[in-house]
Length: 229
Image 1 (cartoon, rainbow, N blue to C red):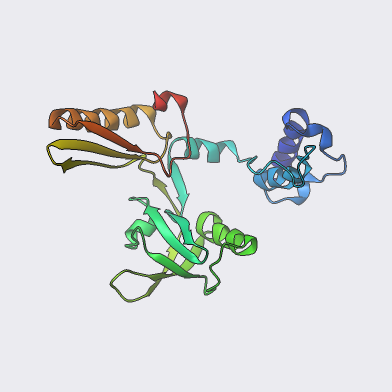
Image 2: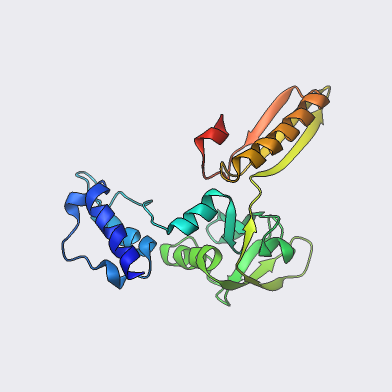
């Protein structure tokens, strides 16, 4: 990755918003990959009036990884998480074609341990460890508390899978009215395929004569502008 890291650094010196703050002594070759380079330079995003660096989002990945990401191909354990409270970590959703789905993991299960570590808290050190284990590791052993069932521990191995951007579509009848409910998790994927899925869903909604439409974007991280039209 030495050459790739160098190129990431060279581009940063030209187009990073805070490029005037970047030190000439920075050694890009000492980092593991281009994303580590970009994470390292965030600390130089100093703005008057702010105590801490303001850049928390810049990242860098290889083109092959970006092609997978923009095509809706996941390469992780396949579950997303959220803190319901300070030390109550839950599964928010599971990608249907992922390792987590194959293992039978369900939305709302509570995570009580990760790699035998039972410290599940919203402090920075704990969050960083949890994020690395769930989203960046090749495998993880996770303990779950399941509603109405005994606790269980499952070891997951990361794998490539096709994400499902239109996660759920349902129709709810309330009184004499019908509401269509659509969970749209990502504006990514093969655009022709996603448009075809939308056509099928909205034809169904139309045929059922819905009165209202609910579009759930809670877990949507963005993507192609063309898919938001």
